[in-house]
Length: 295
Image (tube, rainbow, N blue to C red):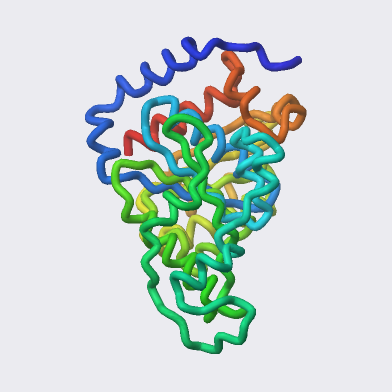
């Protein structure tokens, strides 16, 4: 069955109830909150990132959604019109900006001489895309791994952007990352306060989650949230699998989001999900939101 619609007033009321339970929530966001979303490919990272971005903006917080996935699906998930989203040029392809900031133009034989740690404090103002009130989008493209050519001006610029957004105050940053664990290996998420690690209820997907937990801890990310998505039968599917990883996952908050065929029907935009009334999927994300603001 399709989603049952809820009015904006009903959803806003739920969000306000959640915020009322969190002491000094405004003070917690004054210095900024950094959230990175990661996991195996196809587990639903982008949908979760997009819904949380909208919910946080609707709650009255300034939100910057950052797309670090080379597939660039986040603009569509956030609900940008197809024509507008399809025209976005990611930062790693903004050749003029890269040359302006680093002093080297990619693809022109720049050698090894370019400016390290460029000033990118204007990046959101120049390339941020307004999705709606309090919600902006920045499409980065991906940072290359050292083994495939890290010493290049575009890579240096993107790393500088990551460092800069970590310093922005009064804003919630939520970053959608590429599939796999490479972004942890190159420390792109270093300095983030929360890691949301998403998995499907399969051994291979949970094994990737296990590796991500280790890397997140190694980077000093204090709050790690484990999200199991597309769960059809929570008890039957999960108990046996989770026993294999009991030691690694002990003490971490775990959330179960049910499989809902309506989510695949409405893609790419999450707007119909946000309009849903009393769905278990949206209720689960509300609980994640609550803990992101509480911790």
